[in-house]
Each structure stands twice: as structure tokens, then as C-alpha cells.
Length: 155
Image (tube, rainbow, N blue to C red; front, side):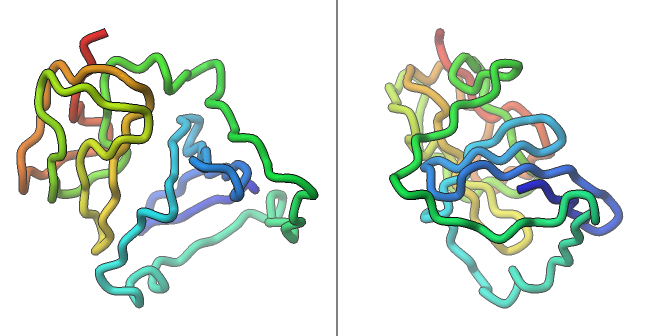
């Protein structure tokens, strides 16, 4: 599904992959992100309804059809492989409300590394691959900007 999402004065081209796969791969302005919807915790459920979402006429969503068999997970695009990333970047601006790992700690793919609160929602940032954490560049209650480096893997 392709959408144009408008947040305040900024618009983003968003393409959402198979919503039945875990993680869901969402590409925002050409950059792939893993989405784990079961981990979304709303602080105020009504806040999620106040964000205006607009879709362009050329890419209006089509009615969803349920696949006959369970869908296989969608791999990240070859141009930006999520599994090879040595650094973990902030996918959105916000405040760090939890740091779950320390340097030297081994993590598995999907392990919750930290949590960013943005617009009254808590977003768990997960490991896109297995590995060992080399450095943690954030602290509790730190404000981060989009693409700030949060953590680094050793390899």
C-alpha cells in the first residue's frame, strides 16, 4: 500500500509491505523500517486519531485481501540491507524513555534496544540483526533527532 502521510507541514512517501508478516517492512522516503505493531503502546489512544493522514489519488489504498496461506516475511530492499547495518539510527525524533542494552551485550534479531517516545507514543527500537553492542550513544531522557546514532554493533 502506498500513501502520502502529512505530519504538520512535512509530507512523507510511505509504502507498507505485507501487514500479515512480522516484522512489517515500511519504506519511508526510500528508507526501510521494521514495524512490530504488537509492541505499540498508546499512552492516550485518542492521540492516534488526531494525526491527519492524506493519500494521493494515484496511490489510494486498495481493499485488502487475505492470502490463502501465511505470508513469508518481506526482506529488506537490497539497496539498503537492514541486516548489514553497523549503526542503529533514530527512525524519528523523540525522547529516550528506556535503554535496554549495555556495551558488550549480545542481542538477537528483534531484541528491544531502547524506546523512543514521540507524540505520546512509545516506539521500541529493535535490533535489525544479531550481534554484540559496541557502544550506546544515548541516555535516559535524552532528546534525539531523526537519524541520530543510537547504538553501534561491534561487527
